[in-house]
Image (tube, rainbow, N blue to C red; front, side):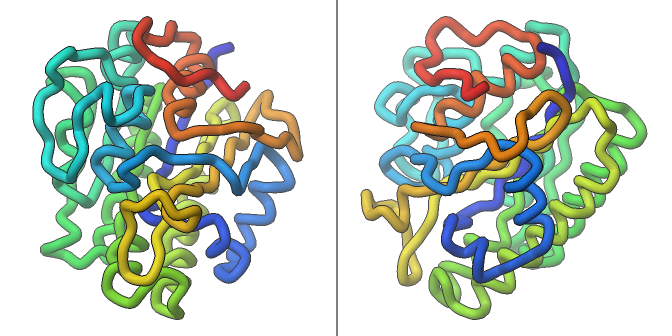
Length: 258
């Protein structure tokens, strides 16, 4: 199986926020592709450890990142970007939270763009990185693109998860997703997920509200209304690799969901 894949991660997006948000693309994604509202993330349910597990398909005790401070792996393994590079695939990386810079090793991505949410504000930075990602795929037609949207997590910490302001941030993130979906080629698979949820004004615990994430997969060859059972964040990298016709790294512990 070989396609193109565009993966969007909305930081801190709880599955139960989607119904309250009620953006029309959500129902379309559910009805026309694969979906689960009950995927699991890893402990600690913190942004950088969760992203490292997503891209390296191992739990935090294996990659060693337990906080939002990056430290080099003692026993290094290839992440998704490196594995795709070995498979001669081109990758783009767009984000607005600076600590994610170490997800990719040098020269494993063809194009990267960072727009500081701290400087420009996360609402504006969401739009800026989305526009940059759209421009990139239009001009260069990459095999894999990752877009990180950080506004929702910022709103959760500032106002509380499931607050009115938080739900507005979820809707704004889906506006960005909608812009991407409108320009994707027919051979591109769109995946949307999160890294963790949240409760009150925090996350990081083993509470269901923190540990449960949504996952959507829509595009050519994906069966409508397919339920993604027993999905975990460490399954995303193997799934992307399979869609792109690239071997998973031997050390990866996740499984392809397709």
